[in-house]
Length: 370
Ligand SMILES: [Zn+2]
Image 1 (cartoon, protein in one colour):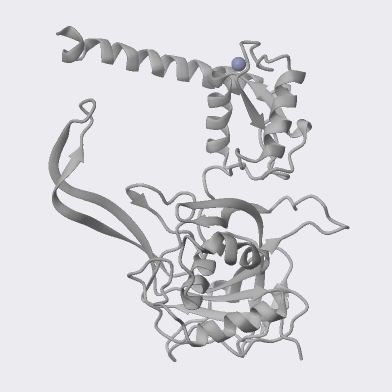
Image 2 (image 1 turned 180 degrees about the vertical axis):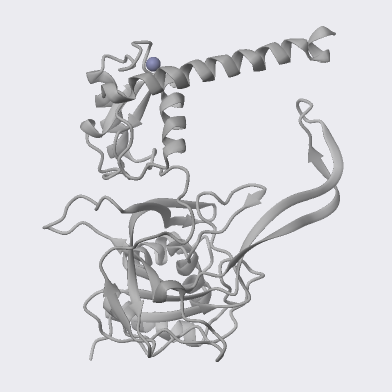
């Protein structure tokens, strides 16, 4: 029998799955395990050093289908974290000025969360991963080194399933203690890889873009993937049924979905767009220095010229700020559409007014007077 799917249970007092919002001194966690985090966990199980991973393992592991069932979303928790003491810390007063202190970071965790994770693909690779996870070479942790798992990671021996959702449905939802309440509205959410098929070449409207497919581990670099959210209904016995579309998110959406700006396909589409718009902002006709995505449905390198519009920096900032406010999904503002005109003009005026206040403040600062 060939087994194409591995099912893991990720559970522990703390977990932290850093996404693109997790950088520098404020390290947030995503709502669920990331593909890069789980692939990193397998590299630790296999004993693959970070620098060797891109050639030996990452391309094979990234090809596996990845799905997560959020059995318990957990509670978000902040940790105030200091590193070292009397270290030379850069300060804002110009070049090379330092003061002695500790490096401060804020780190976010998911407390008491539980996830069922499915990886699907090449049966030989799946078997190899199962062996590694049963007998890991290095310490395994749930996203950050201070987050040990509280139970064995393998949920069941690997099996054969037609797709990710069938694999995630195969394990009933379980109470941990007899006092546990069933999940809210008796529903659990699943986050699944979406890949283009022949019948469906564009990502569905509710798809999300997650930047968590690892290209290298040291330094970390990622490419995007599409993720779709689906819901499963939890029966009295914990058995699961498919629900068509999710009704609500567990956490607010990220502020902005991003394209892979290093991708050559994207660069080509961008250059073509700027050329077609005569290097002028389509809104105010100032020199166009940047492009706006009117849709992220093909983000990550599949962009066509029609997905973009040339804009100047000011109009781009205005459009982006309006998009932030509206929490838009894959389809974004097309600055050529008349319905956005008044809002863009208003937002541009606000930005100009704000910038001139800032300039005036800076002129009045003591350094400037000296
Ligand atoms: Zn403009």
